[in-house]
Image (spheres, rainbow, N blue to C red):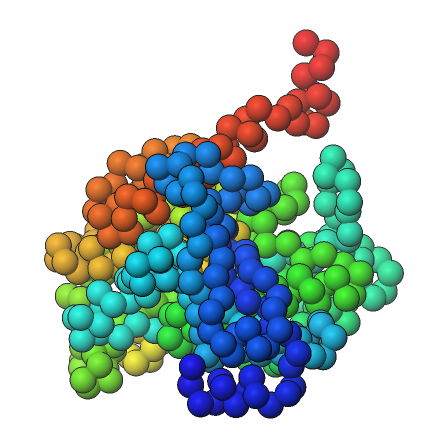
Amino acid sequence: MTDSFQAQLDSGAFDDIECLVPDINGLGKGKTVPVKQVREGSLRMPEGIFGQDILGAWCEDYDLIDVADVDVAITPVNDTLSPLPWGDGKTAQCIFDVQLPDGSTSNLAPRQLLQKVLALYDDMGLGVVVAQEAEFYLVDPNPDPNMPLQPATGRSGRRPSAARSFQMEALAEYGEFTEKLNQYAKSMNIEMSGLIHEMGRGQLEVNFVHGDPLKKADEMFNFKRAAREAAIACSKQATFLAKPLTNEPGSASHLHQSLWDKSSDSNVFVSSDGSYTSTFYSYLAGLQAYTPAVTAIYAPNVNSYRRFEGMESSPTNVEWGIDNRTTGFRIPKCSADATRIENRIPGSDSNPYLAIAISLACGYLGLQAELKPNDPVAASAWKLPHSLPRSLNDALAALKACTPITQLFGDRFVDLFINLKVREAQDFADTVSAWEREHLLII
């Protein structure tokens, strides 16, 4: 523990700490304990928390999760301790890292997998800078899953009938929520850089300040918690589901990324004359080459693939272009130092740790093989062939077949991820929907 972290624990400001471990689904697993237990540093949790699907059902393959349900040690990430703004004033939260019983780093914990990929760049003398975006919907509370969600009613008492993208009056309809969200974000040290009303009814987008990938993943993990709690406080619900409303656009979590030379503190994607470097092109080519195989990480749920079918600001292939939002990879027009690649494929339902890790892994493989990208697209990439998997099952099959990615992330993680997601896809396939009952009952 750092001295400042120890001082926070000793200050008496908090009685209890929520100990949070980000799981494979991007949700927080953990426990609430007295401050004394965190100070003593002997906290443990079952490793089986990584073998749970979105509803908490357990993986039954004991070759992946130890049948003995062994404990793993968890240690606090010092700079993630913050007050719990929706709590009782005496409770804080903190993100924890995970170590296996033999003292090694967990090979299942998403935060540790991101650290593993970042270490590859560190060995190359490169630093990584990322910035994320988060699109999500505000909807009215709906306890009945058989009923469609509805965009949240605004302060005028009216439900939006049109999206009114970028309109400030539309954003003001949710002023109570945005004020509460800002309050929570400041308390949790979340650096938001912009907030707009997006293209869907009740859809908002938040941008974040760029920075260290691990800290930015922590920030997104915390932001999703804050948004959900702020919505509840305002009698609404915030959802990061990729496609929650029929006939409305999906929600993405675009990921901006660049590489920096640690010795010179310079952006290695751009040369002194402003042209793109061979590093830029190889990294981009790695994204193009491996994204179809890792789409299951960017789009981890059966609902995720509905977002790609609508072609409403959502990519359908791995083309790239200069300031072209129809492509999977957009290169914004900007100053030389700000040169970056925007990966537009991840959905808002993706795990931020895994989405960042897998994107960096694809770029890394491109650098190692010195791959070359195809030519940029200036027109609409939506008119070009669809090269992303069309379903979760197809995406999982592609992930299973990708040896370079499996070697990077380890058989154990990849096999567990696939095991959990295959069962979710099967459960979805086994469920007869309201659409089928409405349209096909007469047959």
